[in-house]
View 1 (cartoon, each protein chain N blue to C red):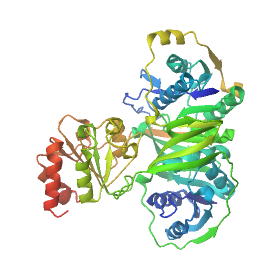
View 2 (view 1 turned 90 degrees about the vertical axis):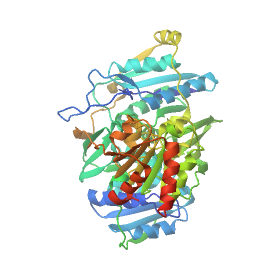
View 3 (view 1 turned 45 degrees about the vertical axis):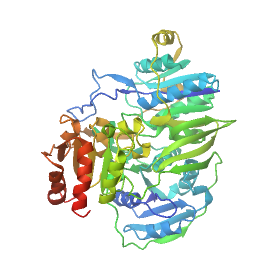
View 4 (view 1 turned 45 degrees about the horizontal axis):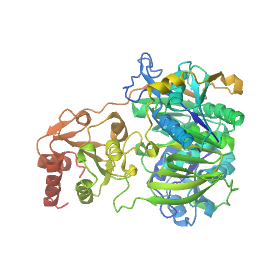
Length: 249
Length: 313
């Protein structure tokens, strides 16, 4: 079976983001960009399925600017077989991403799509669920453990109170949570090999999808900063402050 | 037109999160209706009918909804969507699971985890783990919104909404609930506790979390952890406070042996009062703490336990 893995190019998770002075967004100039961490987990899971002989082909898809091909190369170096770059500049909302992915799924017929549960830039946590709904497929979000069966998958999910297991019919969409696996680092030989793997270049128009944003961002601001408080010297002083000054215990 | 709130509950108890979403819903406008989808959930419907600001409670009581599986929730909510301008739910793992399906089928964008309602179509939401705030305006059409409940006050009691039974929608037959393993705890839930005490990598082991549990029991607090402590295997993931875990905003947050990585701060910096105990005086947690104690936690925490005992906690 084929596995499709969407990957997003985002600001590296170690970078401290800066809001632009004109409040139009976050400064992306000269900032290190990387694959969304949850998507790395998705690629890892898909590659492991291939190594176990459960998947025959892993396709990495990215929707974004020309540089998103680097993100696809990273996935190829981790073990994905080929890539599809849907080139578009500017922000693409989850609904439009889901529509493009739906068209790709109809063409490629994967049995499983593995997406990150959210991208760490817009923090929407929508794309996988929207894709599943548009395709009329089941979903298993926030995956902690995956077991493939005959025409189905059992997925253990991270939920607010603990863990939940659902059984979904295939084809399905799964979104990954942090503890599903630990993504590998690509080795140098694999990075070299990845350069020869094919990446198809497409545009949203090829799939008939309008990517114009439907939400209008009026402004982007910095949150109010907390001020550092005081240092106390002893535990007794701490408790006294909490009780008598702050009145919280 | 009216606004629909999808209730968060466990078939027995209506979660506090719902009362907070009702507050957000009244700000979005229109009469507010609450949908209870569950099984054997009459008590939940009764509780919802008493919330101030709720005009009507719809109850869909069916085995299909016992665990609020996303695919069945989608068809149920869509069967009602015609009558509503806006559909809101809490940004819990349930809400995050089914709401985007509803939005996609209605062909509208979802506005995730709103922090405030600026006007009926304009909302503030966190991006980059709360390191920036975006003010977004929804275009015409239905609005599908998830609410970060920590920033809304719970609607009070005093309502007396009518309760209307509705039938189940079709079963898409795509998935089924197999089982669950819920953490058992006598302590309050992390996201609704008034006091949270969390441990980080400095705790050194899962056993050492017992020290925090003792304090938690004295203060009726919930116990949390940083991602570092979870990754190190000290405690399960549902303890995790942070960008990739739970977002909390209690009256008092006590951070013990937590350095204060950006990812952790994202989950707790809206707490009213923050106290931190860390042996490294340069730890970033002290930059956000109202009260900082530079000390070895293995001395300070037992001492804290003794002091609290002396004071009768």
